[in-house]
Image 1 (cartoon, rainbow, N blue to C red):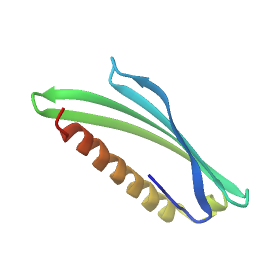
Image 2 (spheres, rainbow, N blue to C red):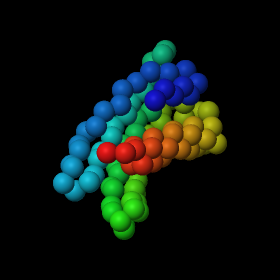
Image 3 (tube, rainbow, N blue to C red):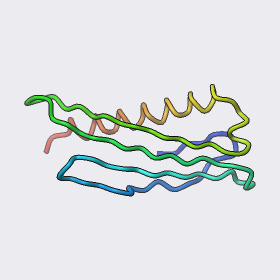
Image 4 (tube, rainbow, N blue to C red):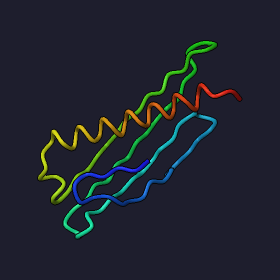
Length: 101
């Protein structure tokens, strides 16, 4: 997934913890302004639970920390980008869960 917000266009995303037995994952991401004037980091925790024979529930918690120039852009822009990221994440998880084994 590629995301660009203002001058922040590069970063790292990694699974910090993945517990297949408990069906949980923790993803950490960081990004920095190309001029070094700020950035963002996030922690996404998700839990996958089976609700029925063909029903799965994914619960996610997201913590985002925004600093510097990105924080000055205002809550609206950052919230819009966050919603777009979450929508892409949701679509990809859905596609993965619906894919034939």
